[in-house]
Image (tube, rainbow, N blue to C red):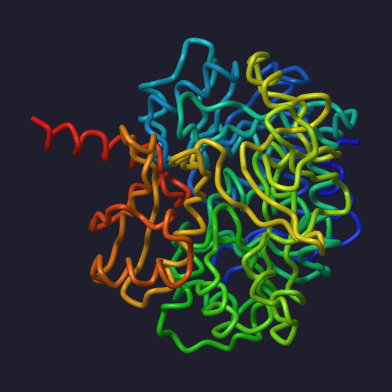
Length: 504
């Protein structure tokens, strides 16, 4: 089934409900959004001569037009290729070329950059809200093109922290099951509820457009087009029963914001995309009350591997509450999740493997990476974890981030949890440094004002002696990618460069 039919049905069944808002202002009703998406679909098929399965890119910061473009692409039977607006022009050019994109939509501020790096395979570059765009959304609407559940709908390009980004192939089935899983197990949504898109719509927040269109909710795009805590609080007070998806760093900023705010205005703050330390999760619960939920997922299984529900996070009386809070929850009902050893055999502690209807069909034009990542139907996540007796999954680290010191595995996140609990530590990241005696030693990069002696004493109180960092490096900021994830690859490179300079 073509997921664009959800919008078509809402446009007929509930035409006057607000589908898209810009700030506090209604932007499009469901009837208007459905009409514009159908018109855009007709233009893509007739004027631009695209065929089902062709790729169409969207290069824009968060904007209301993103939603009608997305559904116009799907209604035409095409494949959406959303690009992060913060990428370098060369990175955008690579994605356009690698995906074989024939038509791309770009916002004004990104038009020149995209044009200067566009490959020859790109036939049309359309300015969002420009004359060609306005003609496209005003054209005669076309019927939704039939698509099968295994037809490609979204090429989800990874952030590419270790090399060229890979395009995870997400089908209509993947996205439909993801949407149902969200509504069933993360954030029950009713018609007229709302979601605020403060995180990039090209990735996590954009995926959550789908369940909210399915349920007839309002998609709210901030006037700023970005993440501003004061603006978020104001919009949550204006729109009914609002949710938002946020990276842990965004949640921390919201907690730290001094703005007075009626916390009952928020339906759910869904956090994911990186580790939320226990102390940070407790602070968020104290500030916003029982509206905090966690998801763990990847682009390869979009936003859907495990979930820690609002009820579990808020259950402070449970004897294992802190252990649960340190976990990423239990598997979604639509999936099988297990941990396996290096040979792929089930193990108590190992790499997280996922199988089910949200798992991608593979990487676009990359059979080697596809074969390495999907083995016997199981998605190998690259994350290390362990299940407890209650079925809660706790992440250890990315497999490549595990430190092997003297033959023993050291998981950086375990050390980071301890160091993060110090009041003078704002951020921390632990990496492995090559060592001639031990193979690797743990090094902590710290943003904050704590002393090495204080941090060492804290570690000796909480974890085994062999796990404590052998050195503390204090920095102004940690390197991060466009989604706020700390780049341990870059941190290790900096560490090697600093060692080389000292050795000269």
